Length: 229
Length: 217
Image (cartoon, rainbow over the protein chains, first blue to last red):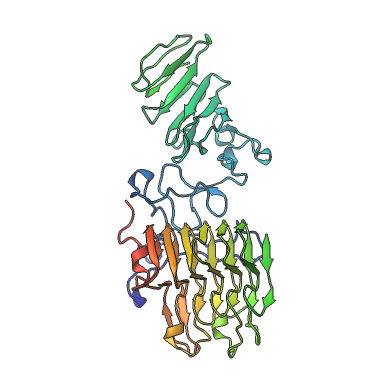
């Protein structure tokens, strides 16, 4: 994104610094949204490519912005130090404040009860992953757990829905967990998902798709999405 | 950490660190530091309009990092500092010196001559997702364009990698009122490495290589 000559300098459409003596998380220039045709949105918004589209050598965007707001794990990041639509995560545990049940102690617990859902769980072990938790978009109930690209080889372990769901995530993998129906949809076929059903049977699934019902001991040979109770 | 309202004659009115292994700042505010002698400009007006008569004394109003092996600044604000060169900060180094800046805001800084925001020399700089905007320089250079370089950032030597930054709305403003936009000055000797997806306000000769001519898909 480059402006032209001096007279056609690209307007970044940024807000102003706060005049009061606040900390670094408040001293930012926030990109502005569109007001009308004469005041368009800042060209910095959503201008960084998706991870899959990044050219070789280009870094993924940082997990947090200057304000300690989460940058999108799977969407476009904003250019500059501020992620306009990011969610606050002041303790930088990867769980935005609305989902973080115990932010002061850097809890790994999450729930969407404050966002009209009933899904809850815990990041049991982050492994070597950068785990981000967010409310599931377009779903009243549900939480999206993502291991950002750039993590190591040790998977993160997530347990949810009163331990009836156990998920292992490697870098770049993501899953949506909704507790009422123990429904899960996985975005990557290579993802390893372990579901413990109510007969305490455990099953591992890799690739493919299946569904199972109450007390079924699933021995399916694949998984990409499914529902069960 | 807040480093604020300091006055000095020399290098780094707010903070100066020399010859160390590491200078690291996170969640810091470095603001309103003034590296000059003579008239202090009113806080309500730009330092560009102050008649300071050559009173500036050294590099950097905010942070001066000199020949440290590593300088790492993240999630910090460097704002409203003033100096002769490098209004917000200056980093000088030798072989192997590294500067990393991530998620920083560098704004409203002023320099008498070059580099309203950031002055770099001899370091391998890696800039990611910083906002470098509304800095000014040149107010004490008697309108000699030779010394009015880099409203936002000026790099005299070293190497640069830059992704995801906003460098825009920076200006050069001479003491006779001559004003034009210039976001960065990069000396031809600087080795420009990985770069792209930066928002550059003015695609002049020096900056154009850092941006990306199309919006990200």
